[in-house]
Each structure stands twice: as C-alpha cells, then as structure tokens.
Picture: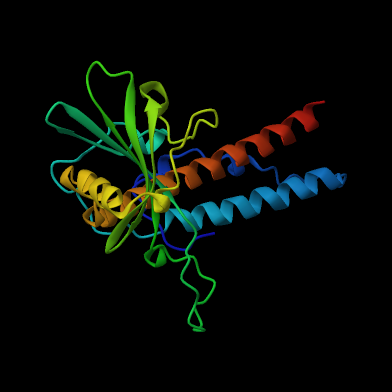
Length: 235
C-alpha cells in the first residue's frame, strides 16, 4: 500500500459505518475454517482502513487559471480539468504511472511515497462546436516538462473517457513525424495552457482520488465478506 495520500475524506470518518464492527466474537466452540479465515481477513481490512484514515492531508492546491475542476470528477472516470479557448473546449484526464526513478539504496527504498511520483499520463481533448470529433493528445507530464506520445482524432462520445477505443486509429508514431510538425503540436497545446504547470495540481488531485478509491475499496470488500459470513451462519 502506498504510505502517503491526500486524506480529504478522512474528516468525519467516525461517522462511517465499519462493516467489520459486526464481527461476532461469540462463545461458540464450533468455528469453521471459513469463519476463522473471514475473521482474520476482516480484522486485517479494519487495521489497514484505520491506517488510511490517519494519513495527513497536504496543502490545498488550486489548478492553474483558467482551468477549473470538473464537478464530480473525483468519483468518476472522466476528465479532471476543463477550460475554454476561444470557441474550443479543452478537457484533461490524468492517470498515474508507477514510479520510474530507481531507489538510491536508502532505508526508505520500496516505500510508495506520493512525493516520488514523477510522471503522469494525460489525455487532452480539444473539441469544437458542431464537430463530431475532437483532437486527442496522449501526453507524458513531468514536473518540468511535457511530452506528446500520440495525436489522433476521436469521437466526442469517446473523448469523455480516458479508455482507448481499439478500433480507432491512434495516429502515427509521434517521434516519426517531422521535427517541425512535432514542435508545432507542442506549441499548439502549450498555447492552450497544457504544460508542466499542471503537474503539482494533477498529482495532488490524483492522490485525493486514489485515497477515496482506497477508502471505498476497504469498506466495500469488508461489507461483502461480512455479509457472506452472516449468510453462512443463517443457512
């Protein structure tokens, strides 16, 4: 488990329903192997859930103007940011990549510390009114740089999701394009505010989303195991 995240959902944790609180500590001497395994799993889930709730939130970071956060984006799979540029609408979806910087041999090696994340994947869509397709950029975002991996056209319905449609053409290999074309594409998205200035906010936003998903996962898995345990007892 990553050891550092943004705990915006940690507030009010005491009011949450803990599915593992209903674990029976009965005095029955007939405990099936399945009950024992379930109890161990629920206890472990509870311990790790409580660890997650204790994670400290980082300083609040606002997106660079004029980008704004898409409402409900933390609980969905769509874009995180949006803005307008003339008659265009630009949306940005983000994914986290595994830390690609090898450890330096220190005692903290192996820890998945959020501050070590140094690369993000961006899906940037530029759409225009009346157009059925949008211009889609797949980019790698770093603290001090942005690189384009591919440029393609996508149907607007597909642009709402970061999942690639395998049936659509993803465009040529970007590095195979003429240098002047590559530079022109970089200037195109930079003019629309897509650059390394987005990195601090998007990294923080992704921590918040990961934290929420992890909290939700512990709770839903614990509920499932506990309900299964009840069903076995009632049968």
